Length: 139
Image 1: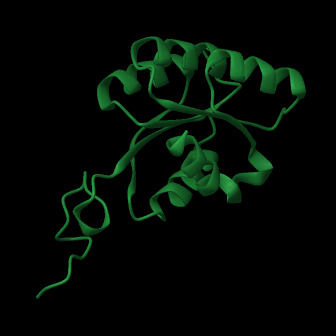
Image 2 (image 1 turned 60 degrees about the vertical axis):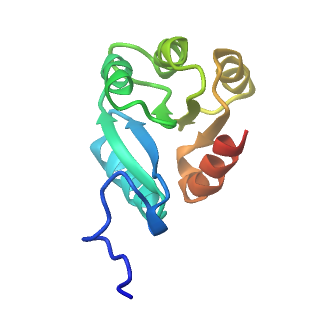
């Protein structure tokens, strides 16, 4: 029996044919987006469905690809991450929203929770992203 390799699997399915978790990345820094994509795609059942450079683009791309998870920077051009997250959740309330930032504070964590984000993660702690995504999906 042939094993499934990455060339044989449809792109919207993960390992063993299990539907992949679609993740949208929103950050204005291309290096951060690349690092996030690498971390996310290292997981066999996660797939980056879109990337956005600003808040409005994140809202638009979320409407197009219907992600289960959004990893969003707080400081984004055109619309900050909290406002973009609220807009995404208004049309897709089950989306797991994760806020990433260099500017963490108790006030920001509280505002993110009130806006519907499931977690706030420091960009200096991105190596824990997989655990944060797993927890957010399970919540």
